Image (cartoon, rainbow, N blue to C red; front, side, top):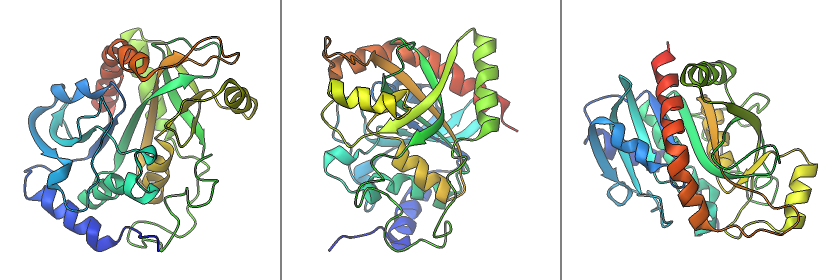
Length: 280
């Protein structure tokens, strides 16, 4: 029988974190593959490994440190996930989104989600940043792939949450303002989540392009779904790590994703810091 996350488990995990920190985090930030360096900018940081948190799954992927970092960034109280949990690691979508429930229980109201993604839109180049304006929940359309499946957690949200505006327009505006100030050209587009861990075939990519996706990855959508259910404001940013080969003439590797992350990090830092500085 499938096990679902309970409010008691969320409460126990949040309580264990509260015992280790002295500030109330306002903004949560999820750092994607190769993007964990931003955590080094956090002041007065308290590092909490996932294995010290009750019921918390561990991150097993290269480039994901596997810990919460709590402190100050751009004078805001933040909680960073330095390494996320993925469905393809063998976890359920409920486990994948458990950290979002913890953030909600801690009072985090704004969530910035980053990821490394393949650029389906052929105008995109590796090293570009794409602001997510919408997503296609392909993983959630399959049996058991929606993290809201099962008993509804009424403490966080309603049974049938609206998903017409997942990504907050005001946060998107702040990101564009930060990009303009820093001279960083920001793309916009639709992100699609697949289960992974294999990269897409050329036929997969042509299908994804046909249904309107601009970038593809293996995360973000389950987290955004649960965040929206719990009333969080969301900003999603995809770092385009590789250009999708629709004709199969170029192979994609995780090493390529990691290497492009080094190019993306400085841009991503400037955008996130700029957004934090502009928050009311």
